[in-house]
Length: 244
Image (cartoon, rainbow, N blue to C red; front, side):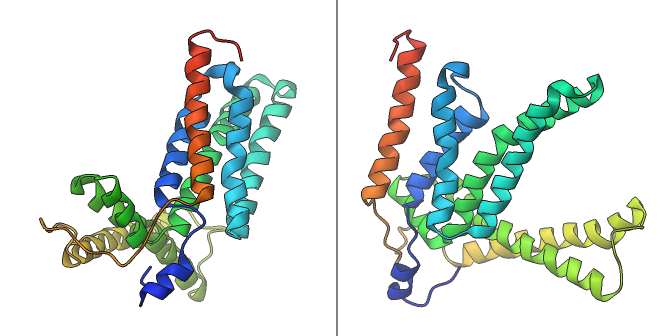
């Protein structure tokens, strides 16, 4: 995302600081997706699972919110009907339901991070926490690459539609030829172009870069960061056998 002035940066400023978003993703990945704490942290995990959807509502990301809720409902629905299915279907429902209920929340938070954070904001946040450039540069390229690949995928689908090619009724080899090969070729080209653009912008330079993007913690950031620290403290107390 490119911005022409400091004023436009301020207008586009997200509800949360990028560092807060990264902290929430780490907590969700450890406790919700990773399952740390087991059954003892069940109520905490349920509460944590609501955070990404609340943030999507605040940012008015309706499409991502609806898609995430639908995937969660499918996951929990599979777990509910699992005991009534035959053995093979029971295992498949358990596997799919477990994956969806564990992964969807963290993936939704990742989508929120990518969708509401500009590259300038992300780089500024990484510089604030003194992250090495060996990590900052690849991650900043990744921030640009995912949305660009998504747009390229839509363009390929649109081009297929204009030529009368539909996925229904065609063989897997034709899907590979018409869709996957152009996508792989475009992904390689996009990665090279974004890497070159990052170097041209001076991301690999040994001197300190300036940035017109202003970031900082607000009251909502402090609340959510305190919540993240509290979750870690609750897990430590439960791990030590302290009953809350």
